[in-house]
Image (cartoon, rainbow, N blue to C red; front, side, top):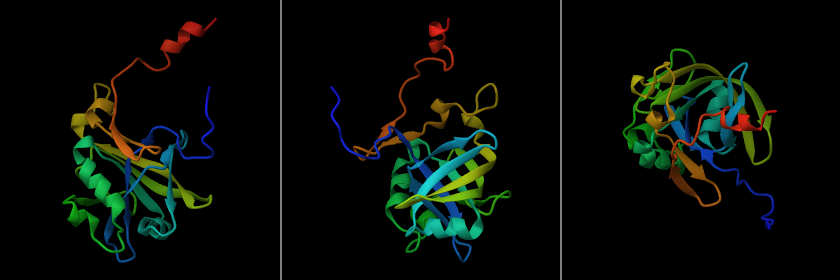
Length: 190
């Protein structure tokens, strides 16, 4: 029997993303966000939800752009830190020794050391409550060559992202391969 837990943010798992933006004086900033996901295929879009007090919130509104940087597990410590400290008070890139790269497509920086980057232009802003959802159209995806497979697309195991469990406040490694999608369920077709 299931037990009611009330209205909670326990959708599992949550992605661990690092949002890249420029501040009011052009300084690069990053913050960790877990409230996000793909929200449209055509045009390709992601949604990330941020609270108003965050520096990245104002940065996205001012520059109409952001990047979603997907860190590998090798950068867990740096990723956690940039989610703890405000960009209003510290140069987070310098603090964790990561390198900002100026996008040539959108007005936002990305993280050189992270294997996968989505460059987004702001498409829509949705006020929800404590968080505001920023919907960004993915203008380009950049990937390190060593994470690409035979078809030239990113391979999850090579990117080696990690996940967040909202109910536990813990990070987890991505698990083992189970089965090809859109395949195993076909046994139920009539």
